[in-house]
Image 1 (cartoon, rainbow, N blue to C red):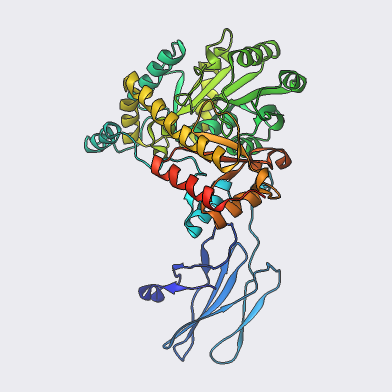
Image 2 (cartoon, rainbow, N blue to C red):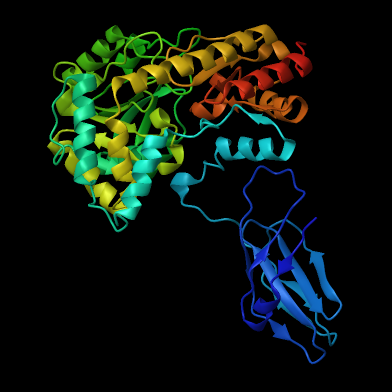
Length: 483
């Protein structure tokens, strides 16, 4: 069913804004409709030719009696279609056109997070899928943003960051890793860590360069590497402990290997790379002159061991870009404040790409981020205690429901094996969980180059208030039955 609503005033002009709803269960995101110019007849009726790039079109007739909408086939065709006008003649309207996308992005669909969150809203499910908190960040950081706005810090910031934030990032990094970096030459502020990743890859990777990733991986890695024309090689981390298979990693490194892209603490598994694993990776990179792009956005959510930045290991700072952000640590994911730390010769490429991606990041939020990074150590200690409590609620709850729960040493995610419940794969299980149980999880197969490797696993997040976590567990206990 398609409903079209037109603003009365807009009928005076040659283009019309419209909104629509659809009963389709498709996971695809709806796209705008584009309206052809209005054709007025003598009898005060008018015909609108409407098409949507995604492949759905309609012809609408407006008269004094109201609006009549006639659906057209959803199949994209190359033929023109005829629509009768008020005086009985016919008018040719353009056929719907298929969506267009560059070849390097053809394989990528609407993100799994969008799909699952949309289903959650539709079915009233508790969202333990997408990793954003359902509680707000600290007041002192929000007040700093408000004050920055009032102080007039509302125009473009310096491209690589306001000096106050660059200095705060450098200070925090020294405290955490022991490394002293130049805030002016080695810190680049970006619009979230996702943009820091994109700027790093686009600024330092050439078409044909080999980049090694560890599956499962954050879904933007593959898409951004594809945009850069990289040749992606993959090492799979397998349950139960998701250890790095060093021999397999060594076998993949070649003269064409430009970089290793890693993430610790690791999304989606919660694994933290051990000192021994980091030492092995470092030795391999030094021996083969390979760069490391290290995504460390969950560094403050380390529960069972201390986080180690690979840049802090001997001989590694000169070949490492360390990527981080504000959102996870301060429950302010919507602010999109991130940064990249790298030696000057690597920072040059990162900044070149950043300049033509976003150029600059929200000015008042940068001032607030600087205030956040100066929080006392007690803030981080309380953060870990709070999240560890939430983690225990979810882990024990999932075990009581019947899942096989794998260890999570960091992040705010837990990966489980769903196969006891008899579903064909992770996507089918997650759809069942949303529609029949009322809880959202994320199928992990989307985090693998080979989806078959993740079909038995799903990811839950515990970055929710305790009441929400308890309610989700109760729903699963009540409605999720082992088969």
